[in-house]
Image (cartoon, rainbow, N blue to C red; front, side):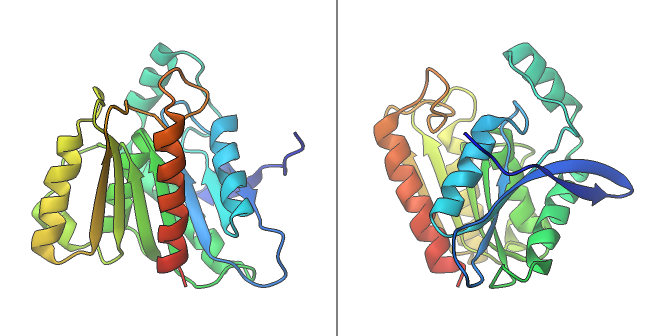
Length: 228
């Protein structure tokens, strides 16, 4: 498959890469930042960006690991444990700002969609980053979210989880939904019966095609509704 070359993103004087996918349209389109799993910016994340472009979005997947990717769980665990959340959020903010600055992106509010580790960052990014129009954490945990952090979320949230997830319990989503409800944040939670962690990753044994297809349909519809 022929892909676009990666672009460069400058974060606090340090360069990282990002994969940018554009829809085949002549008018400006909504922007979405794709936040990686713990494996890094790999072909699966590029596939997600390409699929979003096929649905009419300008999608950018930034590299939170500055060029490193993992193939084995032990490698991925080490990279994820070394990740500093503030730096990762700065990389994501840089990606958001890049999309907002583009002439082919409108409106000037960007969606976040993150998976696994990236799902946690999509939660916290919605609370801490500027220019966010919608956020979709997919089976994401990360640091505990406080009531104060939840109250800072101004964009609608769609949270997607698997009932059989042993890595990030759906209880995380329930707890955060309760915090957002208390703060008056527009949010929806979907928990797929029998689905495991990373059930949307079609390159992993846990892939659940039925749940993944429905989740994708919901994500696309959610962004079309909120990013306009």
